[in-house]
Picture 1 (cartoon, rainbow, N blue to C red):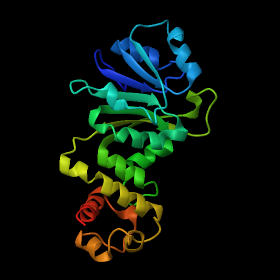
Picture 2 (picture 1 turned 45 degrees about the horizontal axis):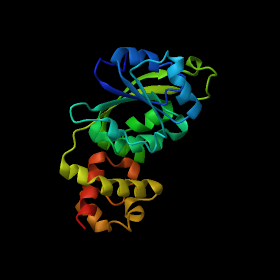
Picture 3 (picture 1 turned 90 degrees about the horizontal axis):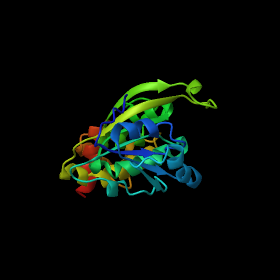
Picture 4 (picture 1 turned 90 degrees about the vertical axis):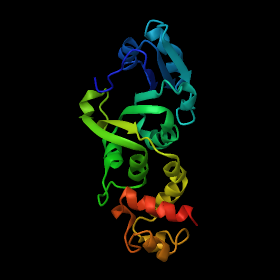
Length: 236
């Protein structure tokens, strides 16, 4: 119900597994693309679901899959799935690279990852994933899923999140490499002040000129402050 799949939408499911979510999604949209890494699961999925005509199976690693190849200008993608928790963060960064052709994403993730995605400056969970996800997407934490919903029950809680890519103009998109470099560098040494952690990228006077306190630590900076620093880095 949270996904609310509609006929004709270009829906992609990552990691269909045994097809528990796949069946109702396919019934709703008519044509469904799935990306499954496990060769055995990929080869038996269609049979398990009764050989439906509208099921298109890509046996591939989602971390390397070209999601852009499935989209068209008139039909952006909707991407859904119960993501493998051990690769969820790199997979999200891979999907951000295709954000221009994605309408929205609805995922079940480890609750800790969802906390990081929506974290605000100053919190313990705030980090590189928070900044880069919030640069690319509007997000809504929809609801939690307890361990008892799984068999066998995992040792972690899960949560469902909706991520909707923002419309980003060319000048802002051009800042993304500088932003990612800055954020990665700053949070690799998050206990250090910006003056020290960013010294190989920006001198303290450039940080201050961007309106940011060079004595601040990265977890206190808003996305807007990181963007100002990215503009300073890009202009060098």
